[in-house]
Length: 255
Image 1 (cartoon, helix red, strand yellow):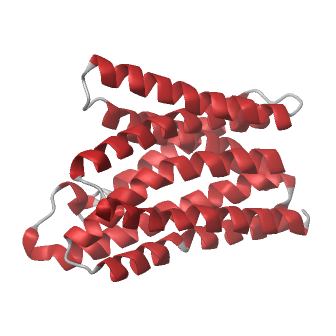
Image 2 (cartoon, helix red, strand yellow):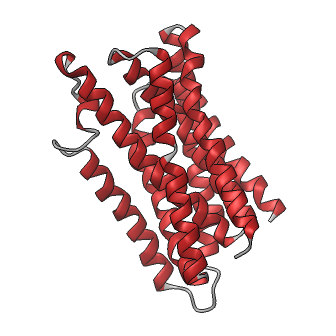
């Protein structure tokens, strides 16, 4: 693995980390506009995640000679891994538990748990981006875009939680940036493992990343879209999901 994979991975994770600043932009928006923006980004993120999984990561994992059962099991393992991680984070003693049941008397605790949960999420994102760059530059680029588009709406929500918890805007931005830096740690660990184990790590992490993306899109993001039951919402969401898939499809032309 050359130095280019290190530079591209760390630069991509740094760009994704800057999405944590996006919450500041919503301060001048009304609640209605923020909800609309979030719905648009979530719909597009579903398309990019599924497109990256089925058009890039999974085909890459299945491209090896005689690769049949192993990549399929690793893809399923990725889905199971992300399920377990999320369940642990949402456990009653986990850092995401109070996201759904915030208590006004424990606002500082809510902010702390939000930052811890976000840091764990960003660590996994950094791991996935670097693992993809170990496969190929094009694979890394497509994964970075997919992560970026699902990270933006998440960061908008995280910023709102921190401000709602009583933190100043400046402190909320700094904490979001701090949790985003966990992505760099995940990327470095994946790159170091790649340096040691080479192609074996790539063949392991890429299908796991594909399974993880399918899980995020299907289990976390798509249920959010069901809150809007209007026909207009359906048409908008379907169009944006299709657009996200189309973007991932266009990226295959440069591979």
